[in-house]
Length: 239
Image (cartoon, rainbow, N blue to C red; front, side):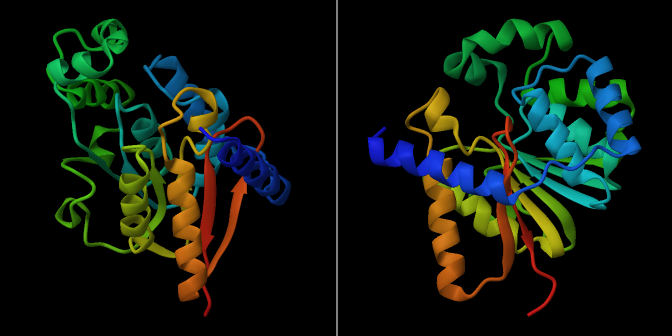
């Protein structure tokens, strides 16, 4: 990663955190976080990420998720939203082991005999008792037909393929599924700083914001809070 790119990520995060506010957790959000943690899910989101996501999900109504992995974020959204649609390519055990073998033992401990990642997510949703609130969709989010046609989601959480082009595609698809006043949240904005310099979430967000500016797309944000790698924008309700 170039020094210029690193400096840009750090500068934007500082600006967005200054503009954002860390909202106090509501009682439903506190209960949802407690129920999730009691189930001991295998999650790639931090505690700070989960707190922020719970705050954004509380009162959202319907949520759309891109990238569910083992289902921890899916379960949290389902504990706070009326309905959750979750999109994922749904890797098989062999595919996951080839890509990231260090996950296998943790997933085995939670869903022995799992064959696909959806098996692990389904086991968690069943344990918490929210499976009926969720629709788990298997497919490539870069393909338009994978996405629901509804455009009334109060929250879209993007945490799928972190390559810049894929993330940019997800942001574009996600925006048109949001209801006015809805929130578009993106995970791992700062991933390149921490573990994966080839990740392009920051580049995709930059491209997307530039396009919004060119086209006059109305939104509030971006915002961030200290400690979380989630950034978000809110779709404006007026012209």
